[in-house]
Image (cartoon, rainbow, N blue to C red; front, side, top):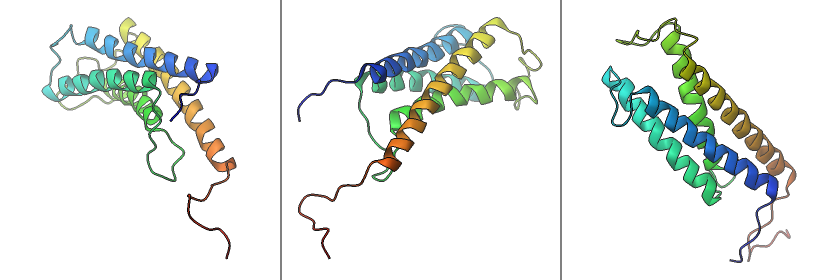
Length: 157
């Protein structure tokens, strides 16, 4: 399979999203007090670890430029779906932890203006907008690109 050049806009979007994924991971390491961290209750700490590892994995996938698909007929590249999840997960956690609260976790309830949290929301929002834009473009491209028959199959009836 020959190597093909990645269009500059696509490379820029992938690089920016990878850096944003790494920023999400770094911010959450800082918020938990470093690594291994000290976030309680236990399920919140585990959530932080999963988010941090997923952010790094997603950055690697985006920089590698692989484009695995969710399903054969799907237009959505898994690396970009994962980037959207890296952004959306902590945004939902932010709202829940500061709004109604989480079970056994009330440390951040009502604390909407914590500086690191606001930086995190800005980074995650930017990542979510970037991922949504790419996913929307991929969906539009898939709808307008004709499906080619597989080799060795006939389309004549």
